[in-house]
Image 1 (cartoon, rainbow, N blue to C red):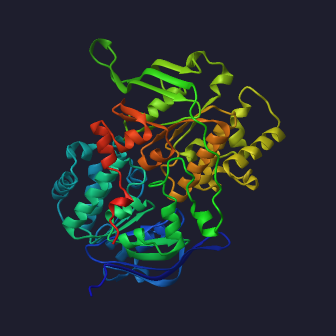
Image 2 (image 1 turned 60 degrees about the vertical axis):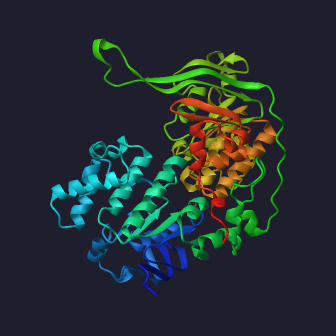
Image 3 (image 1 turned 90 degrees about the horizontal axis):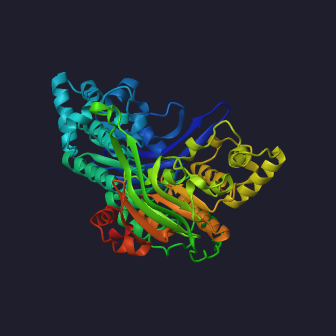
Length: 551
């Protein structure tokens, strides 16, 4: 038997706090052999990233109770800082979840890649520059010189992730740790990044530990998989065996929480209910869609380009181009497409947050002619609740903020309304006085939904409301949206790049690319029998559990 490139044995650690320690890992063991891609899967907080960062000793407040980490012949927990620094980025490299925070915003891409090469390899700067160009070329970047000259903020999310992969492979590492490398990417870019990671690993013979909460990604990429829950490895084995014949109740619950393969608009099983043995409550059936509530005709959004042109004439960039769409009472219409397709800008135009031309009609009236009360019937839930919630306010004040516009309700009235809103979205009234950062990601999304519901809207515009959530919390939010729709007759415009979520929640789907809707119709028809080449390409890029044949 060969010696694993990475071996973790019985690892337990806690984090030192002001007056106590918090246990994070409990007896974790795993190994990765040369040439393997091994998955580490579980919900947020399960200990996946803590395990990964322990390999490179990137947790300064961690207290290791017991265990051993061996990476490429180094006993990591006994290595000096000099030994660790020599290993990081050279023999062991890490691809972080969010490249925008992992890359230095003040340095051009060329400097960041060449600095890694020069730190670990004895080559002249000219040679390092040439290698940086070759790395980006190998990652199928059409114009590597342009990317090398750019700052991180000037690149798309997918391009920034390619830069991170280039840096990871720059010194020919034997072990790659990829921590949620595609979480925030749309399906086509995700497919490209995963293919590049697999291709480069095969070309260099590197072993890969791939961390994800997306079981479909794990199924498409990994030879073996470890499943983590509450700081422990609860199941391991060949990927196909674990996915098609899960043994542990937690793995079974994770798979059951996925919308893929479920009846559209059916309630999803949550991990919490499955593990506690609690019966999943059955929600009310949503009423059939009614009369037209909102109609967009020929909507375009254009922004002036910087610098203008000769003779003072202004030039424009068209982000949304002649889009028409209707939403009926009690209906969910989803808009899908890649990042940059114009989805979010179109949604912003519907609530007056982007300058639009064309016709926008609500209940048969022009949007500009609506009274303040009518305008309040259209609310938006943003993609990132953390940035849309005031960090200084208690939760009760956050969710009742819209009620204070043009009115002066008492504190008691606001708290009473907040309590009712918390009940509607499944939050505990004991958390009314918490600040936003004291809630989990899923709870913050519930806060954002509660705030939108505070003025009793008829139409909710939801911009990627589940994109950053793990599968169990995603199931909770989807169940909540379906329950609210059935109870209050809400209409939804649902913006997403997650096709399985769109398939589950939608009545109708519109597919958008380059600012235009290229196909729209009933959800099953568009997603199962796409007519447009772009829609077909989008569907082909979606990772599916079913593509992993049972063992």
